[in-house]
Length: 580
Image (cartoon, rainbow, N blue to C red):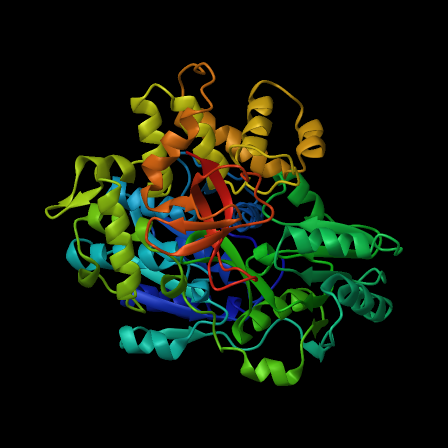
C-alpha cells in the first residue's frame, strides 16, 4: 500500500482514473507538470486491484526518468527498487519476481512485445509523456493496440501527458475518456528575454546574473536553484565556462553522465546552484530546489538522414513543460530566451518523430510483428517517402524481398541495434571479426563520433574505438575522459554494448577490414571524391561535402556514416566517414 506524505493535484482524481480504466480499454490522463501523474497513477491502479492478474508497465522516454520514477514510487511505498516497483533500461535491470510495477524505457517494451506477442503477465501499459511522440512511443501504441484488438481485450492502455494534443487524440480514438487534472501545484511567473544577437553563452550568463539574486527562495531561506535548458552538451560546456567566474555552483545534467553523477545533481545543496541541462530534465524529474527555469527554446533532434542531430526550436507545449519544472514544490519563475512575438510563431506541439525521422527500424519491427503499416493504428500516418526509403534500405541489406521478411531480416530484428549496425555486426561475425564489428557498432550507437583530434586518419571512428578498447583493457575511466574528451557514461555504455554483442576473443588487428564491415550496413552511403577538394558524389547521385571536422581527408572513396544539412551549401555534409 502506498503511503504518500505529500498531497499532489492528481490525488483527488485517482479514483476517477481507476474507474475509467476499469470501464474502458484506453484511457487518457492530462495533468500539468508537477501534478504527480507519473508516480501516483501506477500505484493507485495496483492498490485498486486493477492489476491483480498481471503487471503494470509504464514507459518513460529517458533512462534517467525511468530510474528516478521507480525510485520515487518505491520510496513512497516504504520499499526498495526491485521490490514491488522496479525498472529496466539498457544495460541495467532491477526487476524481481515480486515486481508488479515495471518502469521501462520505450525500446524495452517493443522488444518485450516482439518476444511475447500476447504480453502474458501484463495487465496494463502506461505510455507516459505521450506528447513527445517518439518513434518508440508511437510504435509501442500501435503494437499494443493491435494486440488489444486482436487477442487481449482485457489489456488496458493509458496515455499520460501534461500537454497531450486532445483534438488529435479525438480524431483517432473517439470514445476514449480524457481525465483532465486542473491546476498545478504552484503558480509560475513568465518573463521573456530575447538575445538580440548575443551568443547563447553570453546571453545565458547575463540572464542568470539578472535572475539569480531575485530567485524565489526555498523553505530554508536559500535562493532557489536555476535550471537552464540547452540543446546539447556542447552548449552546456560553453555556458559552464561563461558562468565559471560567478559565485554560483554550476552543475551539468545530461544523458552522458553516469547514474552517480546524475544523482549528485538531484541531491539538495546548502547554496544556490545553476543546473545546465539538456531536455532530460523536461519530464518526470523533480529537482526540488529549482525555482527558476531559463529556457533556450532549442532542442537537438535526429534528422531523416539517420544519426545526425539537428538543433531546432521547441514548441509552445515544450515551453509549458519546461516551465513546469520551476513550480514543482513552490512558486516559480520561467524565463524564455526569445520574444513574445517569436512565441506566437512557434508550433503548438512538437512534430512527431514519425514525421521527421527515418523509419527503417520501425518498418522492420512492423514486418516482424507480422503486419503491414496500414494494418496498425497511427495518430499520424507514416509518410510514404520515408516508408519507401526504409523499404529500399531493408532490401539492400537483404532483410526483405518480395515475399516479406527474410532470414536476414529476422536476424536483424533480434539484435538491439539499428538495422544498419546490425548488418555490420552480422558481417563481422561471418568474417570472424566480431570484436571489430561490435566496437564500430557500439561507437556509432552511443554517438561517440565527435573528436577534437585533427590528425588525418582512415576513419572518424578511430579516436572513440581506441578509447573504448583502452577501457575494456582496464584503463581508468577518469583518465580516459580527460585524454579523449568523451563523456564517461557513453564510454561505459559502449563497453557494455561490446561485451553483450561479442563474447568471443578479440581477433588480431585488421584495420583495413573496418571499411568492408561498415559497407555491409551502409551500402547506399558510398561516396567518391570529385576532383582534388572536399566534394564527393554519393551512390544515389547526390553531391556531398566532407565536413572540416572529419579526419578522413586523403581518401578518394569513403563511406558516409553520418550525413547532415550543411551551413555551406545545398549539398549535405559528411560528418563521419571511413575509408573503403
